[in-house]
Length: 574
Ligand code: GLY
Image (cartoon, rainbow, N blue to C red; front, side, top):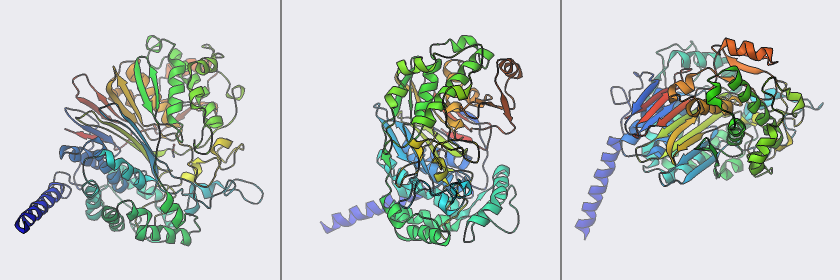
């Protein structure tokens, strides 16, 4: 008996060592070399694919699937690597939404949106005269909601096949040995240097005496130690113990309000996805507290009875129709949407055929509507978020959007723990019913309350065709997220584009207020001229927005995979 036990222990030890070695694939000269990597924008993969904001994150996700993981494993590992290599938005100090479909048709929606701390209050950002102090909701310690990401990753784990130790190790390795910065990353770290210095109370890995340049190596030892604590202790390695103590100490140094109870009590929540039909395709997207799924359903259903394909890609007719749908859906967003645990969101009504028909009853194909005649209200959101799309050989589809809110979140790095905290409190209506400093107006539905989750626009989305996996898609971009996913889906379904073309095409955005259409620089000038004659006002944005990551599953099950042309976004697979 003793011999048998000894033999079994030896076998088990051998398997553990083998498994560890088999997962040590990150390092100089190894399969994933953080000192040498390239961006891949488009590729077709036979079995499994990942598209994300950073080549190293996509490569780790693909390698995890190659070693027996599924799309959930890849989504966890990819997010953890993004927290290391994409600090502008990848995070463990923020939150997000994961939407997935298993091969048996089961839909999974995991909400790990940040929540308002117990000491938060409706008027916490108003001064004595009642004026909104947006600087406090946007930067520094008071801007942070309770982080949800680590709870979300552990809520995802039951759907995965591998152990957290295996999924987190690549992120630990990259944080420990460092990775080489691209030109864009070096520029973004230089751009945020003063703000991080101002809003962090201790030295951080992101700031050094000299400026960052392309080819420099960023090592994050404190972050590696935090990830190691999560590897050893699970979610408690973040929400309790040393990491929690470091967060609380940071809060105390900077007059923040996140408490030890806030951290201990935070949970990810399961949400029933929004599910609807569009031209014989089934579209699945995220429910409140994200506005994304409802907006997407409203906009697509508003245009469904019109022959968009016959109108043509970005012609005057098709763009005008799509703008009017955007205007009406965003008016509803401000009025009706908030955290469903705190506000009754009329999901069924907002997405019903009868309501949609009524919403479009005043649509005039010959002239611009006027937003002030439609309704009032708006919510300001920042655009720095990140998305990853994953599809595996077994038929799992996983779509994750995650964020710190603004670029580098609150710009506060938790001293000794090496990660940035979010500034997600700014996604609440800081002063319901009154314009904030950007001229945006928020609604009662999204007013601040302790424990409540702030309204989001994140739109992780899946599309089925003939009840089979077809598209995995999503993007960063604040309020421009839903309109970008909407346009990409129309490009694929109505204009018959491949996924790369669909996401790379120039975009337009209308969000009810301000009453103008934002366009990318390469938007069709003829269409713009015609629409101006009809009363539309345009604002051109030099830098594009929304870096969409998409996978389309072809009839032969190959994965047509694309990463947006607008950043360092990159695909990987096999
Ligand atoms: N912070 C961006 C969003 O949640 O939509």
